[in-house]
Image (cartoon, rainbow, N blue to C red; front, side):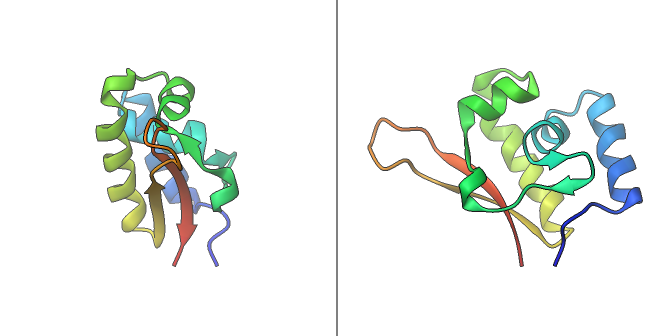
Length: 98
């Protein structure tokens, strides 16, 4: 089971974040603790919280999350989302392995 990013994955992600890629900041600032991947539905975050933590415009959060999901997909990680329980609640997202 994936619990940590490899050194190469860490370098790639940090390089992309340093170059201003919002998708990389979504992962780095919301779903990592150092190299450790934060997994599970209990760590789900709203799109607004993801945008704030990553320092990106809330209007661009969905596109950045989609980019992060594509990066994760190539590494046997899944950035998943689900709608809030009430119609007015935001989508929430979390990482899983599989």
